[in-house]
Length: 169
View 1 (cartoon, rainbow, N blue to C red):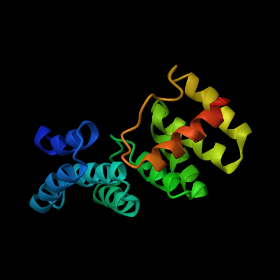
View 2 (cartoon, rainbow, N blue to C red):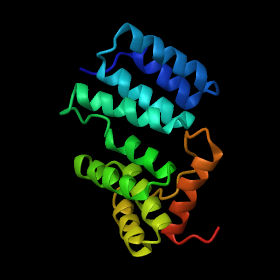
View 3 (cartoon, one colour):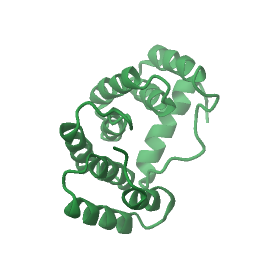
View 4 (tube, rainbow, N blue to C red):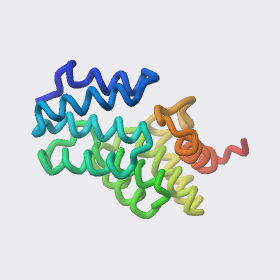
């Protein structure tokens, strides 16, 4: 079962809109109405990730996994991995992002985040190898923007990617 548009709407507001707190409030209402919704928990985790609420993001995505452990429609290991990356727990980030790539080998974001994690760990050879694998998926290595609201989190990801890609700026 896929999420209905009414459930996805708060996520869209959070991704494209400026008022992330309003999007989170809408998602909380949706969760209160249907606390068993796998997709609401996943989307809530994504919104929390965008807002920089890292521990809550991890909890919500993990709850979606507990509700439906076999559903991998949205590569749930990726948001958990990026949350660990932003917490600077690079070892945990690498483990989750490698799992995400195993599940969805064509999902470019997982490669970007894995390369950034390796770069921040000083494992530049591993980061370069991941960048080469990313190039097989997409020509876009460093995206122009990320939906992360916290500028420090955004810069952490982007600086890791630039380092992995061998960029000096």
